[in-house]
Image 1 (spheres, rainbow, N blue to C red):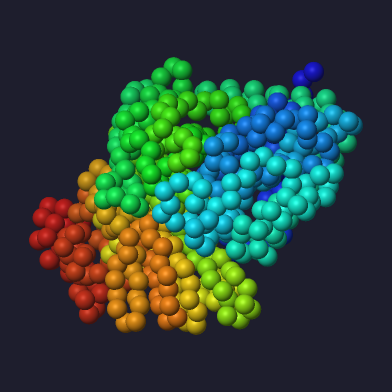
Image 2 (cartoon, rainbow, N blue to C red; image 1 turned 180 degrees about the horizontal axis):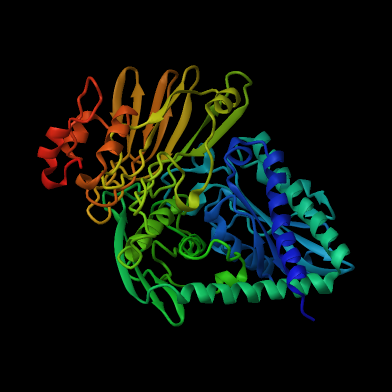
Length: 574
């Protein structure tokens, strides 16, 4: 049996829309800002062979988790132990997951007494216990990072297993929000089951399963063609995570990308061994990096499923910082994962200069805090990731203050944050002169200041980039490095990028994130664009003169063309 093109497209898009409706359900049902507003979750559909069939794209960093965690969890728990209406929950990093905050709920899809597949929702919970509110911090072993959940049956015959649920919640600070987010995941999977069942009723199991096989085969063919169009060769680069949270030694990351007739191999041999520090990435995290890069370099229309993932080949030595082994801490592994993305792109930049951006923010940049809400007496937790500058491109500037690459989460609005949590955001603005200068400049970083006016709180900075800013390309300059500042009792001090602070009433924590790297020599930037940046307050007149070689009258805010010609020589204003 083979579907005609129209049937195939109907089935293909129907399967994708099932995961999109799951995403809409979890987002509208969730309690925490991190899930309902920032969209820190993903949804996926699997066939009976545990192959990914379709994924929603709320959070691209979950690409690797979706591929690894669900098949591993089902095999470990045993498919025969999972019946209709059941739901399996886990967050164990060493069963194919990310850090402990990323909790996966898996539900089987039964149709006419036959299990046809599974649906899964992966969501970053605002707290899973551990040594600090929001479960982030510079921990030295996995056990400090929160409750570790192996595959367990959280839902049985459509009902929550209360003993399991209460055991999990007993480890967690922000119980109301986390309980609500768990229920949102359950509702999401139920929505997916409902929609998939309706699709099966309409077309029949044979047609849908045939459509799945054709979809995976079609995707594998498409990605082979796309990889075949990439330039052949061996491309290398290295870079560093600035600090591991405990030592002054940066964490070395090395990559060799081999593009040949067999596809693309991402080889991380030469990266540092895992640390007794929170910067270790699991294999799933590293896989997500490679999948994201391949997706970014190929036709956006290529579906993302098992057919696509088959093209991702990886050598990540076990026990290294890019494929850590139990019980290494992993809470900051996404920081390493984000830096890997930039390093892979850097390696490929000589071969694909028109496609590759300069260095981006290159970090997740977590801010997590919690304490007792003086308004309610309830323990609260809050977590968000902060944006930074994107790298300049061959034909355009890098966007200012965006969630770069696979991070893809959204802004937490000040109004919602202040109404839901006992904190005030007193400054939220772009950081002047933070861009990496270039023919096309990098995006600016942002500043966000958190004031705790009336209660004690614990605040964790889990970020990076406070030593070196993102790299420039082809003569572009690096972006400004990040800075993390504490203001307490009138005294201002810089704090490390991986620090937990005990705050008193009136204390303020300020994030100033890094800018993106520049692309091309700054002296080749269009003076009109430099002037626009000065007028917008993004670049100072002094920086315009010193770095871009453009003279701007500080009072009239116009280009002094004669001085600019002198500064630039033959490259002056035409």
